[in-house]
Structures are given as C-alpha cells and as structure tokens.
Image 1: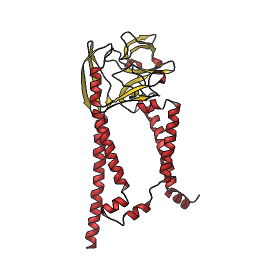
Image 2 (image 1 turned 45 degrees about the vertical axis):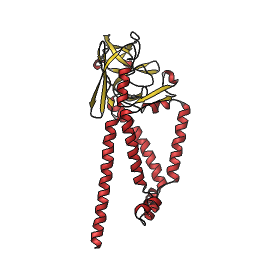
Image 3 (image 1 turned 60 degrees about the horizontal axis):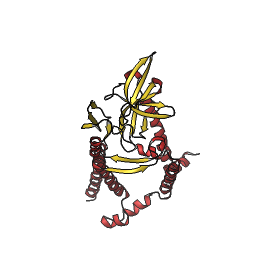
Image 4 (image 1 turned 90 degrees about the vertical axis):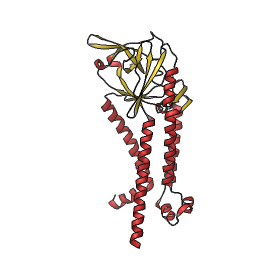
Amino acid sequence: MTLATLRKLWKNEYFQTIITILLLLTSVFVFWYITQTVLRTEYPALAVASGSMLPTLNVGDLIIVQGVPPEEIVADPLTGDIIVFKNRNDLIVHRAIDKKHQNENYYFTTHGDNNPLGVNEGPIHENNVIGKVIGRIPYIGNLALFMHSRENIYLFAVIIIVLIAIIILFPFGEKEKVESEKKEGILKFLEHPDLKLIYHILANVLLLGLLFFSLWGEVTFWNPGAGSSNQGMYVTLYGLYPDVQFHSSFKNSQKISEVFLTHSLLTYRIDCQLSEGLRTGVPTFSWFQATIFILVVLNLWKLTKFLRKNKKVEEKSSNRI
C-alpha cells in the first residue's frame, strides 16, 4: 500500500470514526491496567451492590480500592478501614473492626455499618483481603450493576451499534461548512446551524443540570442488577445536601445523633456521631466542584476561541482598507 493510498484512506471519515472508536477502547483497557498497577490490586474499582454499608456507602457507588499490606489496615468499630475481601465467590465490602496476628498471618473481623450489632464476618485471612476503600464516586456504579443482567448487556450492545451507525451514516463534512459561510447573521444560523455552537450550548445545559442535581437532586429508580445475588432493588441517587440529610435521618441499630460535613479539593466526607463515638466516612468525589471546574474551563476555552476569531477578522478588514 502506497503512501498516497494511506493518506487518502486517512482522510476518509468512516475510517477516522473506526480508528477513533478503536483508540477509545484501547485507552480504556490501558487505563484499567495502569490503575491496577498504581493501586496494587486486581480490583481497583468496584460497584457497591447491597445496602450493608449504608449510609456510609450507598448502593450504586463506585468505590476506589487500594491494595495495602495487612499490617497497615486499621481495625476499629468506628474509625476502622473499610475493606474489600473475598467470601467464596463474592466480594464483600465491610468495615474492619478487629485484627489478630496469629501464626505469622493476620485475621480480620468485619462489620457492615448497616448490619445489626453482633452480625460480623470473620475471621478473614489476609490472603482474602483485596484492599481498603480510599474513596467513592457516587452514581456511576449503577451502570456496572445495570449490566450484571445479560438482557441489559444486549440492550447496551444494541444502543452502541445504533450510535456507531448514526455517526458513520451521518458524518459532518466540509461541504456544509463552506455553504454556511455564504450567509451571515441569524439567517445563516437557521438555515445552516453552527453544530459546534449547538454542542457547546447543550454541554452547558447538561453540566448545569448535573451541577444542580449534585447539590440538591434526589431520584429513586429500579436497578435490576443491584441487591444481594443481583435480584434487583430500588436505588436512590443523592445530591450533596440530600446525602447529608439521608445520613442524619438514617435509622438502624446504631442511632446517629449528629452529622459532620467536611470539604476538600474535589472531595467531601460525611462523618456520623454515634453514642459510641465518631464514625468516619469515606472521601467522596464532589460532582459539584468538578462540574464548576469543567464549566469554567469549557467557557473560557470557547471565549478564547471567539476572541481570537474576531481578532483575525478585524486584522483582515484592516488589511483590506
């Protein structure tokens, strides 16, 4: 195949679309393996499927897991590390409440924050411990749970195929751009809409929606892949303030008397005051802070492009004069 043929092939929009999709898939796999290496565990990210750790971990949260030596795991009923461990063929996420060192091995006893007092898991050998939870990302774990069902995987496959077909069948070529440059003003936009501007407006609308939901939103829906044994259950997504309220009003065997919210860069944490003491929460990704950052960057970038374009137009006009 000659160089000219390769250049011609590269300019083909269908070929570019296929290459883009392949690069995206490759990037996902590479990122996953890099994450495994950095966090030193084969399961660096997991979706919370049951409510045994409510309200600390909500069903549908994506938890970030880091592999640590067993001697570094803190075991305490209130401030102990939340760990992920193997129980037969299942992965369980509970708080480590006790640790024993016997015969040169560590054994852990764990308890789910939402489980009745005295209902513990253990002893758990150190070899069965996957790692400790170092953070959680609300909402997106529901996608992984949803795909636990074979029928839902088929549905996602059909959606992806349809989207790829739309991209391939309706590429945006240069012809539309050239024709649109022949007209000016609102007439030009109505007959030949600026797709980039429309995408920019839609992106802002979606980000603003995410911003408000991440603060005050709350929605409940049925997730067929959630619950023990993936039998399905209703899952609620909470914004920041509804999440705090949920912690405050949560009723289980350990009564919560007060809730403390602390903010950090791109994260927040909710600690609960129990009669026994302060139970620590998990650093949680702040969709609110992240959305504000993305909105600022996106609109500054758009404004910069607009100013540069206007400057070039003014320079061309001055040169003609």
